[in-house]
Structure formats: structure tokens, C-alpha cells
Image 1 (cartoon, rainbow, N blue to C red):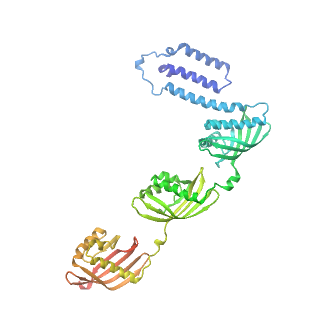
Image 2: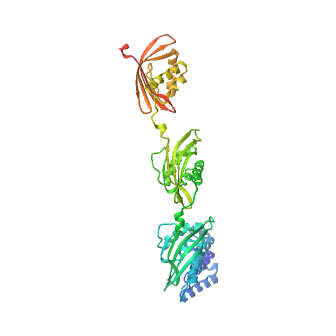
Image 3: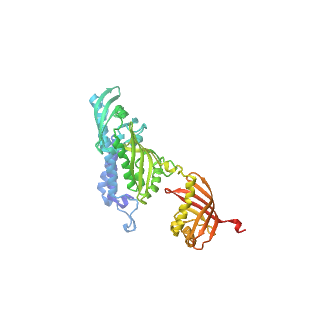
Length: 480
């Protein structure tokens, strides 16, 4: 089909294919090579006209699957580039009758050159068919081409180049070992990292390949841990706080370690993975929080540190300030400090029972009575809590909102009432209290006196005692 509709691309495809085969199969049978050469010659001899269609070209549409010459060029050039790189790093490792210590050391340079290509396939080609790679920063042994390549997919992002600082070579019958200390310079960051290494080389298909590669961090450096000062530990909070300022839950969640645990302030659910941590901040960030550490206590360990104390948030959406207790445990992960554990809780003392005496409970009535004396319905309604219920004396309608409560007192205050408790029974609970009994009102507008039964239930809300429930009824015997 390609010959029919795009003869020039067909010739180019054929030439690339012959080049591809010739490059990969170095010991092709001579007769095959002759056939290939003949095919090339015929292609040039006939030219594009040899492949002209035998039907009217106007009746033939361009096939949707036909590859352009550019696509073919890119495919084959990329493939050849990869194959040439593999050949370049493996060709010098072809087996000779014997191998010297210098040549064994040169095998490391071939591997290092493979790193410089930035192509994990080229690096993986330096390993034998049944390799064992124990990498520096991964727990999993890599025992085949795919797993070796997978490791270098990530490692090569750092653009590493290695130098052997100290090494010892042993040569056996068909094998060689090089072990010692090497140092890598990470081109992506400029960091330098030392490690211990062992390479075991074997002869495979006429080439020296890495059968075993064990790389480990310097043990004394592990014992010392990543150095960090107390001030730097406290500074880690600002990285998290800056992430809050972006209002992007993904950026906040990225501040947590891979196995981070978040016990948040206002959610019962423990968050133990990226998705659940991010989900919490989707809602929390709507408050536009910005934090400040008020009290900090730092502990530093081996590659971990802790900051625990008290912080205060200013909610940009409301202006509200909220204090909380915090614990941050940080671990050094993938080259930076991340939050491994974050526990945030409300300050416990405000949740303790607010102390109040029986006499103080009775005096709460006087606050309400003083509000009546202002003859301002809004002042009276403000004595009730946010979710208050008023069952008034002379209205069938329960009043369950500020507006309904205020509406009731617009009419009642026209009588200019002032009350007095005649009989009181007090109960005190956890941040609530109750006063129930009999009161009597003198109506200043008429001089009438009216007795009634009352129940006040008070709750401690926003730093003061408010009426959560008020039930007032006429004396039943007078109406029976």
C-alpha cells in the first residue's frame, strides 16, 4: 500500500529497514546481504515511477494509516540512536583472552558513560541477562532488565556522574570483581554523594556484563543523620504555612511524606495517604488560614525531628482567630524534610465545664430582665443563643430563630414588662445550666401583674451564658 500511494517514502522505508537489520545482525548470511543489496539496487533503478498505480490516481484517497516520510525518519533515527548508544557502551567490553585490572576498572567507565546518555535502556543493557542490582536508595532487588531499567528511570533524572575514589579489583576465570567507594555528582542539583559499591562482572555472549551490583550509603553518614538545627526545624512550619497560602490542596498535601499521617483539628478521620490528606485541605483552605507558632519545643533525632507546641490561625475568610495544639514529626525523604506525622487538636481548657454557682445562674435572669427594660427587641433577642427555642406565654408559634424571637418581643415590650422570680430551682451541668420556677411580671404600661411558670436553659457560647431554651406558660389553675 505504501509503495502504491507514496513511492518515495516506500524507498526510504526500505533503506532504513535494511540499515536497521544490518546494524543489529552483524553476522547475517552473505546471501541475505546480497538479496538486500539487490533490493536496494532495484529500488534505485526503478525509481518512483516503478511503483506508480495502475488505476486513475484521482480515484484513490490518501490512506489514513499511511506514515509520512517525517514519521518514518523519526522512528528509525530514534531507534538507531538508541541501538548505537547500546553498542557504544558495550563494544569496548567484548571478551578478550584475558582482562587486566585496568580493563576491569574501565568497565565502570562504560557504565558511567551509559549514565551520561540519560537513557535507562542503555544503562540496563550493561547488566547481564540474569542480573542482581541492590540499589542505593531502593529496598527492592532488581533481578531482570525491566526492573533494572525501572530503577534508572528515576535515578537518571538527577543526571548522575560517578568517580571511583577507592577500589579493589579481583580477577577470576571468566569473572571479575571491583569493589570500593565511589562518589556521584548530581548534575540536576550539584549535590555530591558518596557510597560503597560492588560490581561482579561475567562474560556473556562475548561481552563483559554486570551480573551483580550492590550499592549502599556510607554507614557512618547514616549514623550521623541529616544535620538540622532547632531554628531550621521551626522553619519547616513556614514551608507548610506557605503551602496553605497558595490555597492549593495538592501543594499542601505534597508537604507530607509518602506514608504521612494527619490527625486534623476538625475531622475524626485519620488521613493516611495523599488523597485523604488532600481531601481534608480542600475544605480547610476555604477558610484561608494562616498560622503562627506561639510556643515551640523541638527534638532532633537521626534523620527525623519533631516540633510540638501551640499555634494560632487567622482565618482570612472570616477574620476569626483559633488556637490549637500541634505536633509535627519530620523525616528526611527524597532529599528534603517532609511531614511524617501531624497531630492538631483544639485547646482543651475551653471545652472544660465553665464554672458557675446557683446564685450566678439566678442572676442570669436579671441580664434578660435588664434587656426588657431597654424596650429594644434586638437587645432582648441578643440574650438568646444561636440555636435558641422560645415557647412564649401568649403566642402559639415556637420562635426558633433570631428574627422570630425579635418579632415576639416587638409586641411584648409595648407592655413595658419587668419581671421578678418568686420561686427558683437550679440545675448545673457541663457548660449548661437550668433555672425553672415561677416569675411575676408588672406591666408598666397598665400596672397589671401577671404570674407565669418559666424554664430557662442556658449554654456557654462565645464566652458568655446565653438562653438556649425559654418556655413560659400561664398559671394553669387560673384558666381551669
